[in-house]
Length: 213
Image (tube, rainbow, N blue to C red):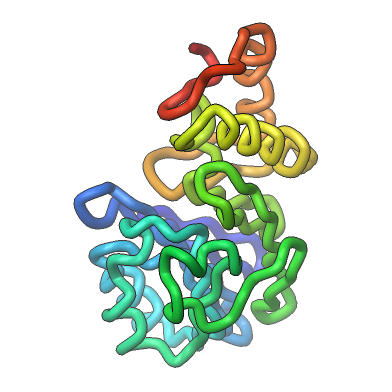
């Protein structure tokens, strides 16, 4: 578990969780005790313990995308939290009525005085969405240290790369990238790694791709 504090903003990275080493995130305003939970993988009880122990009132559960490893804790979360489960509407085909409220690109979810902004980044899945608050980007499986998340086709990879370079790389270089699995990076570090990718012929690539090749 990793904790970041910026004034009254408290961000807790909980993980690795479950068989796929997922990360979940609790973002809270320590003054009002409002909070959101991002993703609900297996073993989400650990994130729920953070919420319970700190006395947070969760106003929304935000899910980055529809892949099952990010939803394995659904039953435990629904039992413990009376807050809407939110994801991009393009994920409806995979998770159906478990999405209780859609998240639109650019939508802002307030947590006390802070705002978590949704950034639609399709490619890994059609509705993949990242969330940014202050200098922290929860990137789901869209962006990792060293490259993008796995994509099912060359067209999906190009879509993901476009979303990363036009949406995420528009953020300041110092923004910390906190992904759905594994360790962290920054926007500046990722942009530097991407320079090698730009020089390659990537037209037929998909699957597990790294910026370096």
